[in-house]
Length: 205
Image (cartoon, rainbow, N blue to C red):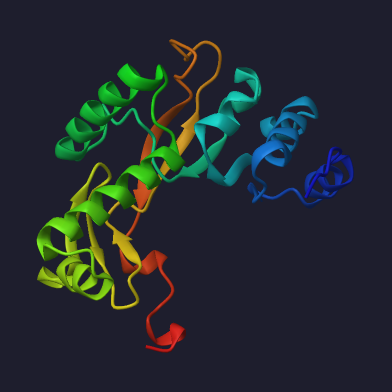
């Protein structure tokens, strides 16, 4: 946390000659690491992968350093080329409404908050109550299934959300590919379902 110079680590990575260099930094740490991967030429020698990315972090990375960087993104607003056309439509509608109010596309944390409040209000309406146990029971009905701007999901026994599209695999766009200031990534895949969650058994259920 708070590391400004990753030179020593980058030298070790270069010497090891891996196919992929995976970093789990966030915020300013991620910006510093990914910029230095570009500045040292490491990004030309191997695939650079950042485990969790948001648009606000990506905005701090020069486009030439972001180019070709892979990452997992909880939610990327531009799903126009995504294979699930219903999710693509939901993303377009959500993004247009969000842009109209805030002048920027929604980022991961905005989407997390929106989904949480949408589910909370769905629970209130279904239970016709603010009682937590009644609301919880209402949300857990129908095997806990729900739909949000990320697509389908369900609430597990431990009340954790399992999403079909838990995270979107994105590839950073370079200066030639970016069409505007928020055109940061291309969605190239996804992960989701129970396989990306800790098992209920491992949590004591």
